[in-house]
Length: 344
Image (cartoon, rainbow, N blue to C red):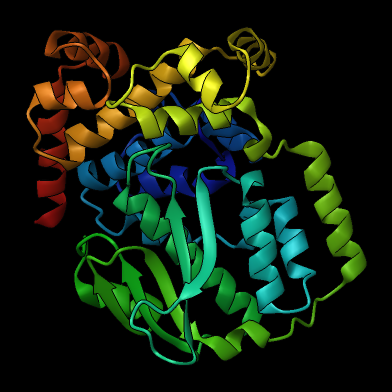
């Protein structure tokens, strides 16, 4: 499995899809997500398929605010042990630092951070939410789910978000703008560089009534024992190296091994110990990059083939059919049609 996310992220998807007149188990099966994974929120599902499923459901069920609706029914507990650690922090700043450091226990592909205000306003910071696009394609619905939940969690922990200045989203509005302003209670800006909540810096100093250092440390120890930090995995390092070099250098094991200061045989042994291999990781990186280029750009197919390291367009077509069960043109057309449906 490539980059994944805890199944808890889909809490509420089954009743929501049923309410909208859809068939949730058929929808999940279409994207290779086992229905029983949702019965155990500690199960993991591929984040690319998780996000594709959300975007497809929103389009097919004519529910452009599907991500926000899911967020409305979720809370901090979807983070499992990380939720316990966050609630036990002493301040908002410590909670954000803890969430950022240990978010891999929920999904290693996601990031939260405190960054300077994009408009350079004094006394304002941006609480950013993003996905590593080298790992998985951008998803508008998954972004709205994540940022919507981020807002709900912050409101619950602090008690009020009176210091919220505005909300930033990288994509254009999927729903009427009023839907966003009703949800967040402030101005929402679209087409921005990163999804973010812009807040008064003073919020970072807010203290939690639930602070308990002993519980926080116990929860973090549990996370460290139960979950592998993906930053330490060789497969993660190989994915990063391949994503950076794809389309510019031949994706050879010897080249990547040299970048990681390892002998090629040592690299292969370590990958095998993690249950994968060089070719499998390369295939996942190519699949995710191909999907991103085909669904977010209008680049000619020959150029897409070159960008993902294929010798020709024919090789690309065979790979896309194996990965997605359709041709590159069909994948691009279906995605464009779904986006058109959402914009109506």
